Length: 227
Image (tube, rainbow, N blue to C red; front, side, top):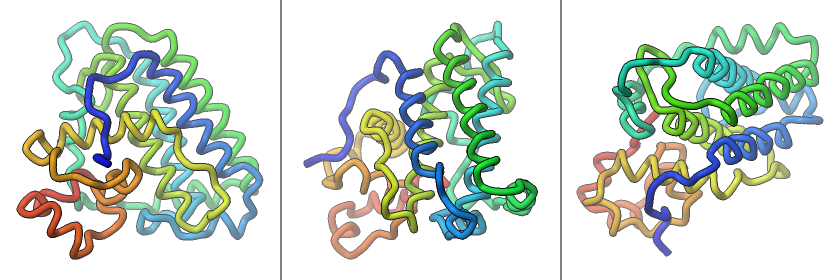
């Protein structure tokens, strides 16, 4: 079965973001200090530092929703990722230091919950356009970027957490639509992965095997689609 379900972004993306963030909360609540030190799919970011990264992304969302723009958008939910090409260097020392500063995992989880839930409430009432990271996006497009970030990092978090919940299905579909846009229509018909595999392999979280290379042909050279 072809992985992504094509089409425009769905209505009610704030609800999708709420479920995506909620699944992350379910994943990390109740984890031990040892669990927070487990490796994820993000090099240099165990569970604790990766949750800090997500926390700061939700905080950035709050700032963006409070920063309405009056000029036309210069990015959408696909072109936004052009500023984050695969292989971009990432200094993880900051999130590692912040994670270490929390007294215990529960304090970090509570902070994540408060900020992420506030971001969802802001997303539900936001209208028009926002400014973030030097670009202007329509609110719906911006929320879609947050959904992708949460969904991909949910899959990153759960590498060594086998009892964690799966990402929200609608959030996975929004993420797949974004990857579609980055991949381009000439590649769509050759993809035979399920949606989760598409996200993992399309973002380079799982390497391509011989069957993948045969399936993709020359399109394989374009992966991963983002870092």
